[in-house]
Length: 322
Image: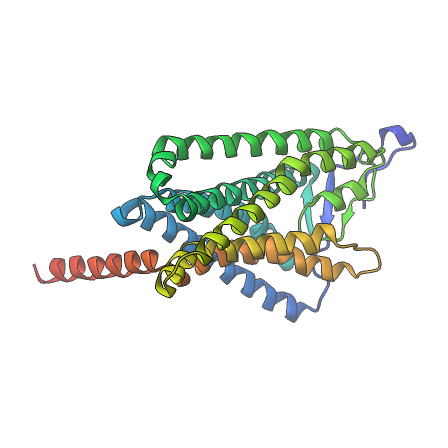
């Protein structure tokens, strides 16, 4: 299953085998159909969000600008994971070059870190809107929003590139079988014959600015947001204030919840299938849920969608009868 020579120091991996889900052929076909539908709906849903925000004047606000960035990240993440997952399901075990595996790992890390940073930026936007409404338009200017987006991308690219180079420079001597459906950090480290202690230390160090600090900032922001909402005298005012951040709070809960179950809880003694199922939540289902949550719980997006549908039908009828 892996290339080997008589000199152990020359042993390297040229390709990897992703086992995916070892189930019956019938169930693999069912999973293939399900994930194909999810992928198509995910791409269409996020493209719809980007289109609505781009062309609707009512959605030209910082919150929806950040939402389009979240949709872009979801499209990248889903396209990085799902097509190869479909191939693994069709072939029962997907063979891919080691360089492709490392590339998939890089884009996965990039989008995950960007989501973490972007959700933090979105929590700051909601904090300013609810806790400092008089200063909101001054602070959250278009230029400042663009700066936050650019800094988020630069930070994500830098951290993911450092982790990519570190993993790429490890010695991978085999075996080349990965009992997963994509090239994640832990399965890759399990293939390495190098000492991965420094890699693990590096991961802990980078988790401070990319996971721990953003999570703490989001928690602190929502503590102040909830305190400000509770101080509003009318029930209508409280409901309106909470509705502006409920979608973001739901997305944050799903995203951090799945990351917690995957990377924080101990995995020893647990079957790999459980880890794969949890991984599906944040690689496949979360990119699907984000546009669904914002569409169902956001009146502005639903209103923009209804107007766009009515406009499309009106234009179609006018062309038909002209």
